[in-house]
Image 1 (cartoon, helix red, strand yellow):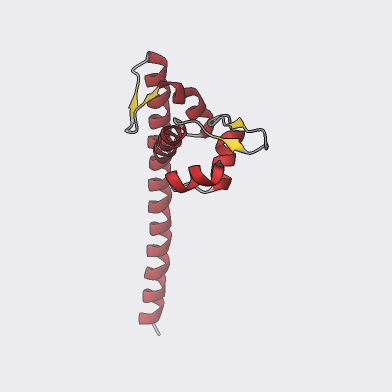
Image 2 (cartoon, rainbow, N blue to C red; image 1 turned 90 degrees about the horizontal axis):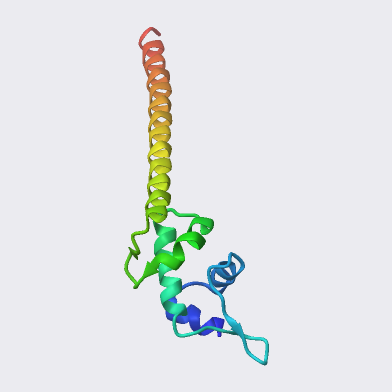
Length: 124
């Protein structure tokens, strides 16, 4: 049941339902309609969480999850997989560069404003 999987993984039930909606987690349904997770569900949720922590989208995870092995960040070394991971890393690097430029621009504006305040205060 979803509550038990939540307790075992520390992942909230609404997140587990989201993983299911994204096609990342596929429970069976019992005769009572409740979700029933197989023995591999804990491992699957662990893999999903690790891939999310790496900054991957659920769409990317859906593509990569069949390549995941074990609870660590182990993935089978398929060329398409490495291409996807490298593309994601490149995108993150570009985003970091953009953020660094934005941060510097903000610092420049703040510094310029503070200099004007100091200069105008010294002339009074």
